[in-house]
Image 1 (cartoon, rainbow, N blue to C red):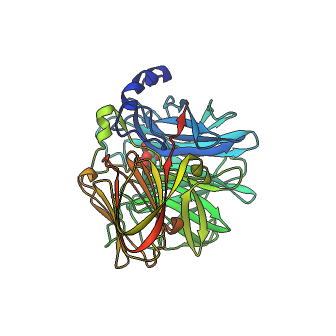
Image 2: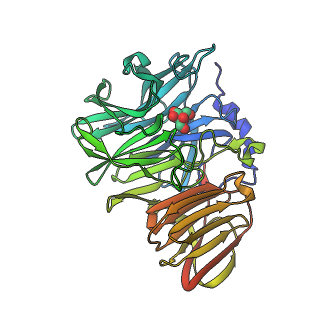
Image 3: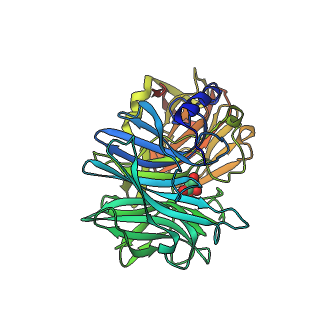
Length: 466
Ligand code: FRU
């Protein structure tokens, strides 16, 4: 197939940049479609953020790896496309994958997707998912494409859906984790081991005792203070009351025991409860911070963003730092986000307060201190806490996205990061999160709370994209 060149992509960018919903401090495709973050790493001081990218089709088409780089998470360079589907192992797209730095080289692992023409279900026949490797000395030129494993190398009871490799260092060796779907429609992961980052040997299968969904996408392993944690995105999990309200889930299991031998997984914990969050990727940076970035969107979502009229869709979330506290993973925007703050305003809120902001691009902190409340944002979004239930509701601008819930026993504070067409809401300094796109330009905030509190409000500067 022919891919668009960087020059052709540049020529297409002009339409999207004029769109009224372009975000100010989130990464978007310059044109076309974006989904999962890929290959996240820090190399010689520079962060490399790649992403699933279809520049020619804002509804999602052939997948490339787009690329931003940054040193400070304020100024970003929009780099040339890093990976094209230009080998026989990936003619249906260079799918998701990760990166690991060793000495002076970045090693990338990703899925080469192949679709064969014909009458196939593309689950049991008609597809290839190849585990691919490339390397780089600078994060820009990715070379030496090699196919490490094909479907015939994976266990026989799996369907052709085996994808999204992530590689981490585990003591004196490395582990690769791959997401998979069995022939019996059970989601699981495969765990491989390597000492040289080139040869991988299957050592274990990771799954729950009772089946949990039919496919686990985008697995990520991370060690937080000695606790091994498996993040993944299960598909095929039914809604249960206020749990699992999106079409596909995102969250984590705590891994107890030895992941390469005897282990057990905890209950699945949902990570971000908003309407638009999926396929997060995690990495440790040079100062050993665990940073996670998600896709502010969902596959097969039952609505289309109004941005399609200007030929673009989706964005990445703010980078968030993870910490492990009281048996739970907390997430909060990395410290660099504070560099976006303009002046600080303290606002006294008494019972029923209306604030009209200068702009929708702000950070708002509300110390609600265990009181029930209702926050109306813009015309359309309501965040409400009552009877230990937090509800986020959208009306017209939700395009069918209606309500999401979290049961919360104690609620001390709420922080809202608002951008032109997104909200990222953090509860209790990151114990819970909800991320959503929003298409409503009203600058109103109405807060009802039966006590008086002092809120802190910052307008935020934009990212600089060069
Ligand atoms: C998750 C996902 C991955 C796949 C990629 C393709 O959103 O379906 O499993 O590698 O997107 O774009």
